[in-house]
Structure formats: C-alpha cells, structure tokens
Length: 327
Image 1: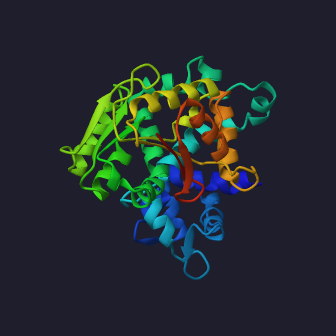
Image 2: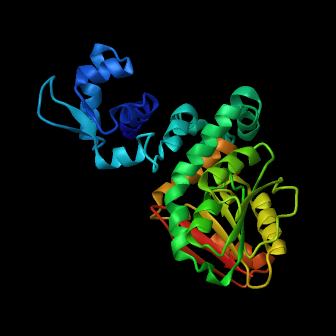
C-alpha cells in the first residue's frame, strides 16, 4: 500500500503545504484555510504527514500547531535554495497516473505516457509547452542536485580543463563543476528550445564567462569537443541501439586521456540491491517502452566495445552513481 503514503506526500507538494508553512507553524484549521481544504481533511491529512515523518506537531488536539521538519523545510519549501520538489511535482502531474497502467506496460512492452493518450511522444509534448518543459527541467534539477555536487567533489578534475554536459538542461551540472573548480570551462549542450532556460540559469549564477549554453541535437549533431563529457540521466532514456550511438559519439569527441561520465541510478551487477535503479528501469518501460537502466558491467561492456580502455563506477548520492569510461 506504499502508494497511499506516496500520494499523500505528492498532494501536499501540489498544494504547497510545506511552502505555505515555511518557517512558521499552523493549526489544522489554519492549514485547511490556507490550502482550501474541506473540513473532513483535518486532522487526518496533516496527522498522516506527521506519522510519515514529513511534519512535526506540538501537542494534541485541534489547537496543536504543525510545522515543517528539518528535511521538508530544506527540500520541499519552494523558498529554500535546496528545493527538490520539482521532481515530486512532475511525479504527481505525470508519473502517478501513468504508473496505474504498469500491468499493461509489462504485458505489452509499450509506453503508457503521453504517446498512448495523444499520439505524441513525451518529449514532443514537453517541448511544445514552455511551462511543462520548465517544470520537467526543474524536476531534473531537483533530483540531480545531490549527485552533481558529489561528482564535483569526488572526480579528479585537476587533469582536465574543459567539460561538455550533453543534455545539459538548465546547465546545473556545468554550473556546479565550474563553481567548485575555477580552472574548468564548461558547456551545457541541449536542444535549441532549452538553450534560453540554461542561459538564464548560468547568468543568474554569475558564471557566464566560464559556462556557456550551446544548442544542438545529441542524436544527430557531432558532440562538442571537451576533455570530459558528461550525461546526467540521459543514457537510460534510450534503447540499446541509441545507447551505443551515444557512447560512440562521446568516444569520437573525446581526446586521448578524456573521460566520459554517465550519472545514473546504476543497478548493482547482481541486480539485487539498488531497488530504486530497478524501479527507474520500470519507469523507463512506462515512459518509453524499450528504454532501460543498466548495471556497471553493462556500461563497461558497451564502452569497451567502442574503444574505451577502462571503466569504473563511483557512488555519488543515494541510489545514484557515476559510470566513468576513460579513453
């Protein structure tokens, strides 16, 4: 019954409960008034969030005030610089209804997302609506923030001078690496419709002298040359043929001694431990049909097939790791 707690959290994010609480506290009736809830929702809704560890409550009864926990204040209040609720907003708006058709996906091998309902692919739908595109980009930024910071700390960038983040979205990875390593010059490479979003984010970070946004289609155009080429949650979006195409494109763009870094929820080789990585792979089935997540051993075999000399997997944050191949 895990979906009960999941949807309770997702609805709380959708209603902006954690943002409206901020650093303050409210009683149940005040929460109902602030969120426009029916009286029946109180006290079950906020009390369920207390039991789930997502709100704190002081005392008992209708006058007892609720407040954010340390974690929800940091990660689910939109006023916080570490807000990651974008991924939950997207999960609520898109993935929650699509996952209701998981059984059909398992039986048919076909996606259950927008393409099933409108005939247009997920990306066609996203890129046709600026608001939904920005929501998706913010969702990816939220879920990637921790792993990207971990990569900037753990990978040895001292041997390199340039980085290209393929499918760079808001430019987040480039900004984080450039901020942590002043000698690095970074390029965020993504479709023309995404480029203005990245430029705004780069300018806001004050790093436009060392971080640039470049437009292109990584499935069609040659990749920009760089000492390090990264892909954050990109490789898992594709079937094996497209995965191999991308890995070969990276190999061709890198110099000798260059590194390819795929940041993904890398599944453990025994396929027993990284439950999130395996569930993410099921999500790729729901989203795309033939796309899938992969193990470190899978990545190593593919990279060695196109000519990379060595690979490793470096744990980053939570279920996410960096699969790294060296040319």
